[in-house]
Length: 155
Image 1 (cartoon, helix red, strand yellow):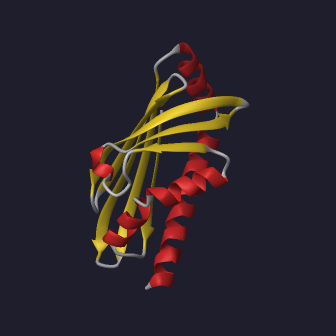
Image 2: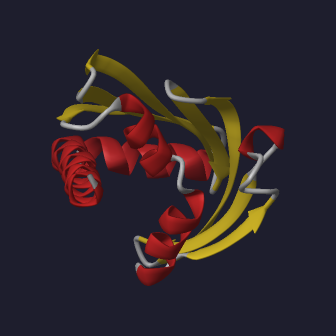
């Protein structure tokens, strides 16, 4: 099961990458949403095996997720892979410079069931795919808008 979204941001690619790779800020955002996040590794050197243990409530059930930074290519790509609750997944974030002051953000999330409970979870998500896809696109759009606003204030 896949979700994807693309947004254009009025900011240079290096600044957008710095914003999406600000892992401490993203962890604080998750904590504010009631998600328990434990980081393993050094944020100063993310390419050396940064990982997270994440616990959250989803559909009235406590879920755990082990998230690992798989690919970290400064200025162009970040790929996170995760496993938990009977599913494996990957989040791929790609940046493309459209001009010196404009960047295209492409985000793709893929989920693959590994157990029977994972299949049931993914199947139930497929039934609500239209609504979930709309929500995914909205979140990416909000993130792009917040990033653009934050970067325009500091310029």
